[in-house]
Image 1 (cartoon, helix red, strand yellow):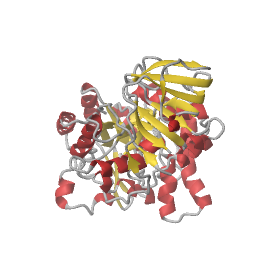
Image 2 (cartoon, one colour):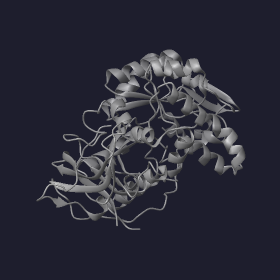
Image 3 (cartoon, helix red, strand yellow):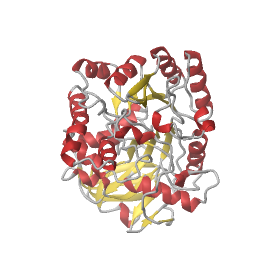
Length: 443
């Protein structure tokens, strides 16, 4: 397979490394050099320009809560959707690249849990465009992501990458970043203890509410669009250091004053309770620690009442357990509670956001996440919502993106087959369009 990359004219503001506890899964936030996954070579095709141009397909999903259109088309003009219809498209408009036609058309996807820690993104300000392009393609755009939330990386480097996408140097998604997380006082996770002393000294561990507020303000001044909190940090030998609730609440309140969202790495159910009480917006993992973790009905009801969203990251737990060669039946017992958390949360009316922790995970393919979400009880349209309308609403952009309607941003994904028939099709992307520009096409 060969991948082709076009320009992305959209600029972006925008935002965990995380592991649930003190088991093997706790290693997932290690800030180490990560091996790059094999990906497609990136080249730059002819630009489709400002349009107007057509995307045609066998089926088009305007939104997850709307019936699909058959034999449909979509007209892109000036970075927005100009019209949507069925049957014979309007005459006189150019067709887009072949990869963008003939498939199943959906709105652009958001991955709400990524990291730019891989060496492939290092020194983003000076990296050769072709190298950055390959990294963005293999991790993100080939899977339909037009928007991503970086929940933990070096802030200056990620904002440099965002600028290079915005100015068209490379084609990529819109990025919201939380920069570096805030940890409890004396609460750096044990799996980061090997880092150089000067690096550890730069990790924020506010000891007072005032220090937390100052750190959040600094991060926003430097380009962050949200805050990531470790409210419960595994520090070794089965011990968890918890963030002072007053500090967590102060950080959350300041983030909201700055116009951003608060994301939390919870570690265990008690961490979820602390996060909810602090007023956070998104819990970025389910929990599997301690073994047999459950979220009580009262906790879930409180999460739903306070409009706290959840990013399940179900594949992550299998990824971690695979490292220790844990047998499949044992994995099912360990990771099963996380799926039950998702089901109970959904049944209570909770909002689920798709996210994979890719960038920590070097297995970039999200197919396994879709399969596990379905196994947890999510329908294909609920999964589509977690990729499109739900994150658009959570980041207060529902008037701009998430649906395929006239006037909305032309963020479009074309799939080779219908995910209603097989959820694996969500990962079978042939074309990704962001802001009306083709940023990935499969030849």
